[in-house]
Image (cartoon, rainbow, N blue to C red; front, top):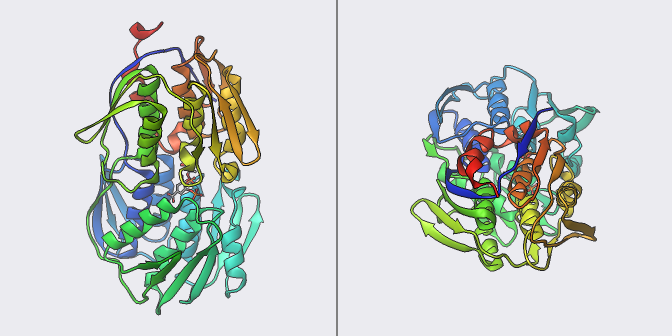
Length: 420
Ligand SMILES: O=C(O)C1=C[C@@H](OP(=O)(O)O)[C@@H](O)[C@H](O)C1
Ligand SMILES: C=C(OP(=O)(O)O)C(=O)O
């Protein structure tokens, strides 16, 4: 495992964030479903995006990467090259491709990392039980699936992962009849489903929503088009937090009107007392004294580790509320977020469905084991800015899951001369 030592207390500079991982997954899939040729522009490659590209390739799509442009030839989509798809560690890829394979009535196998296959598939398991679809775990690292999805009136619970709902919605317009999908229970991470619907509409699909029910006419075709992926607010959050804690940052490459749920980082930082100014293409943040806040993270789960770090360096005690689903991410992020803060000399604990964090003026520093979780690596890097001693991150290469250039960008805004 690779080790990184961070010992900086000040930041100053501009960061251009990578493209939204969520939008990139969806746009690559939508273009492939169109069975045409086109280009998705401004895609920053990460291992999750590569996993989606490789799964598309195994389903017959050719791709050609030139810098940040990915040109797809999906004219042979469906003429598969491999019956084994490898989503690696990407939850989105696994849960989006399961319904895609059900367009073909062939046996498919999904092989992924053990951390991926430990994440729940219960919502599909429950759904398929009543349909003529077979899905079973073949081993710790493999899932086998066979069946053909027919149009119908489906109902799926919304309180496990929104990725099941997004995955089903993307294929319903291609079925030979109309469908509805009702989301039951508490609809969490809803903003991600809104992103799915946005991309579907951008690719010419008609889809309606009445309350928590989606109405999807069948016999539709995704239209071929080129598409530009906007910047990623989940990744912007680390640099906005860094500016608020330790100096000044300008974070660019962002759509001011984005529907990404993690855009919420802006209003959270403002409520905590940070000074944020919109600039062309992004936002500028200055160091401010931060106040603790109670935050419901059920729609913005990916922000949780960095919000924990912000609370650990704020005045007062704050809660990250409704964290239960965080147990099923790349790591158990309830445990790993609490562990991160406590290991660095802060004060955090689990309490029911919440993480409670009491702020300190400074953290101490120390050795962080990041449990192969990219968001823990990035949150630990932000935390290091508030530490008296260095932070040593063990396994920092995990960052490649979503943001391989993270340390390149982080290094640009810190500098030896800022130490102290
Ligand atoms: O659809 C997506 O692109 C995502 C949905 C969210 O998952 P959940 O719906 O499981 O919260 C989020 O945590 C993940 O990083 C990306
Ligand atoms: C949980 C994440 O992604 P996924 O669910 O796609 O693995 C993430 O990026 O933090």
